[in-house]
Length: 202
Image 1 (cartoon, one colour):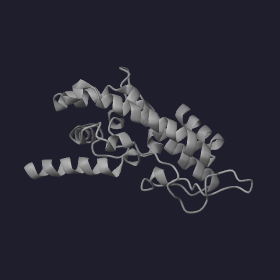
Image 2 (image 1 turned 180 degrees about the vertical axis):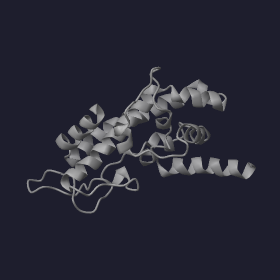
Image 3 (image 1 turned 135 degrees about the vertical axis):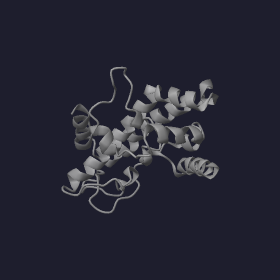
Image 4 (image 1 turned 60 degrees about the vertical axis):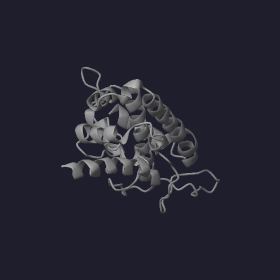
């Protein structure tokens, strides 16, 4: 309930396109990218695959930054709903296409649009495309943790428990491909190439 209330507060009070586009999203995205880069420099990332996968799940600051970015994506969706009541968004709507930067009010202030959507917000984590996380590792995270299932921003917000008794995040959250709206196409293609190679070996 607390995360939903926070999401709704951001959507209601920070629904101005410029606040999301120029401040909130870039800062949180930068935080997540820095966490990915820091993780990518760790020596254990070159160890056995099973050990790397286990270590990655323990990188709580990394995944919390990813989840915070997803909360902003959900807030952007909610801001659109406030402008266009009754018109929800299904899983197929990319969070990067939720706001129209060209839409303005009569006094010149940017607002969430009611017309066609464009990519005014960029949620994608460029550090993934830069190779900080090996695609082989992410394939196993996506398979073992997320069971090849993608998670919508709304699901992240509505998840009742973000940690268990051992302060571990839900395993299904600990995969980049699960958060498809945050992943650059180049990184997705590398992960798919890994899957194709493995299938050919079977």
